[in-house]
Image: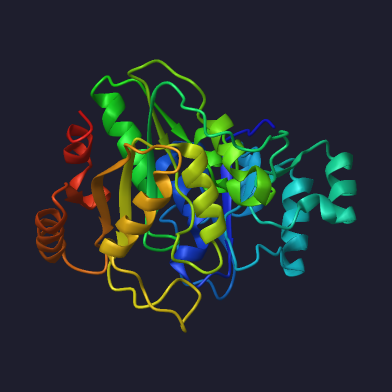
Length: 332
């Protein structure tokens, strides 16, 4: 699967900032590869990139049209087919991170063949996996886990990789979701792996490595989320982490998408993840807490992080506001 930049990011008529995480991730981490964003009437959010039509993007050399939104269930709304078709007619490949495949739509398949473009359903792995074995692997591994979905596990993982590279630490980011795959160019969308093979897929994602090498493995879901705990558990077992970073977003009162649920504490999240991780690594430990403090001021965020650091005895930071060097230092 060859992903060709530059990209035009399509965010449709989104009204929820979290729903455009595919586009926002690229805008934040690979802005130099993007020509702009495209939205339609009704859209109230933005990645911060310039608005750009399909024809304008084509003139700027865009090679790939990215469906930059997500929704519950990962369904591709048919109302977007004419816009996708227009991008194909302008010679663009289409990248889709939804559960529903582009190749399910015969008209898109026919059109892409006519214009010699590719339909890339990057959420669906092409590899064949085996069941997890739990054998001890060489090298070191850090997994980001969370109190909920969409609390910053990918951003924390990428921030850690960047900071460690700057300190000349041997490290790789291992993507486990469609956004991370698009950013890094490789990985496994773990939520599309058959349940029996999730831990095995995670093992293959982070194989034996040099003694001092770190794999920073992007977490998914939450052990406390009724819908996605199974994916989180399989990834936790297969990752065999030496270190965990707990990710949390301030001012949530229920699990994402489930108003009837209660929100877990950081303490509960630590207990659940440590207990589960010990199945494949009895020596696992929490090395840091990452908090999305964007809902409060920087001063309030700093105070909250300081209190959490004192409570749990590990560094606590907002990666975007504070950086993650204190967590990296705690790995040594």
